[in-house]
Amino acid sequence: MVISLLIDLDPQVSASNWSDLREDSEPAVIAPQVPHLERVLAQAEENARDLAIIDTAGRTNDAALAAPKSLTSFLCRAAVAC
Image 1 (cartoon, rainbow, N blue to C red):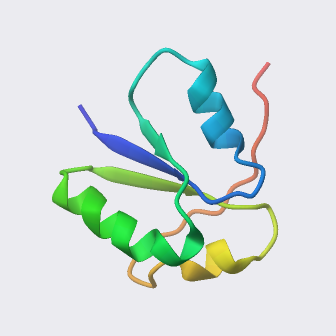
Image 2: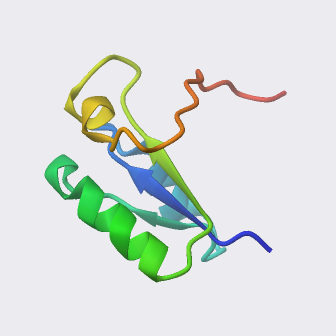
């Protein structure tokens, strides 16, 4: 089982809103301030999180630029599955 963490850096906090509506506790969802991203990622690694997904705004912003350069990034656009 992959233990993951969803980090919501999007000002719209849609991932956090999604988390509030569901019953499952995994993946954990947190909404830290952008300057704390590296610390949050280090804590996630210490807590044996296998995967961290960072949700940022759809445009270039401070959150997107704050990710450590050592991360593998996948850029994708959200879509609703029908």
